[in-house]
Length: 277
Image 1 (cartoon, rainbow, N blue to C red):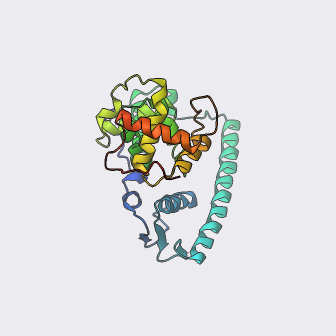
Image 2: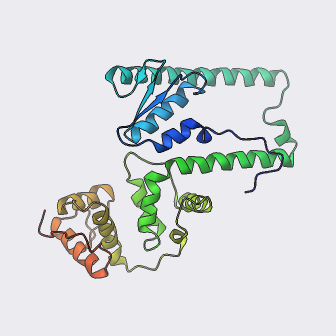
């Protein structure tokens, strides 16, 4: 969507230095903030940044405030901030409801006046702002789920790809098959994805789907044992066996790996020991 000519300049958090620093954070890195006041609009916003850095194995430290998530004292302060953030959200909800109730009692109408008047320019501005926020949220979190899509597409259907994304820990954003395809299209349009993932997937014989899943598992986790894969198929994916059972055995996994090699979907450089349990 093109930006409307009269759209107000957007300053989403994802364009700030905070967003860029958070996106670039790596394992065991420490990110500094000179002062949290003014940079963080609320405690909830601050905790969101801390949690994002924590998920990437990085730490947060405010030079002028007693917040340092790399230390036990700092983590205690962060947990206390979490309690205050919940109080802040509750207080905002109460005040908002009271304000709306008072405004309605005075005869005011809720909602955006320009939206109620069906102002085309205002509607275009709001749609553009929503699209911008949506795109930047995808860009910020893509590194946790997009590699899975690029590994499995287009040789596996979207239903299988979605199943793989849902078992990522900690959980990523909630997707349906439709919203996953939409998210991939938006990232490709913005230059963050490979267009080949949108190609039509071939029809797979029903008995080769598990082989392709196991091949992907071993291609990305070559140290997995037969028991690890059996537990993954049984407990995480809940994939039925060839006979319709719910529990995979090491021998069953061994046969599936052999099938994957026959299909040519295993990475040749992985010299797997099929006798290892």
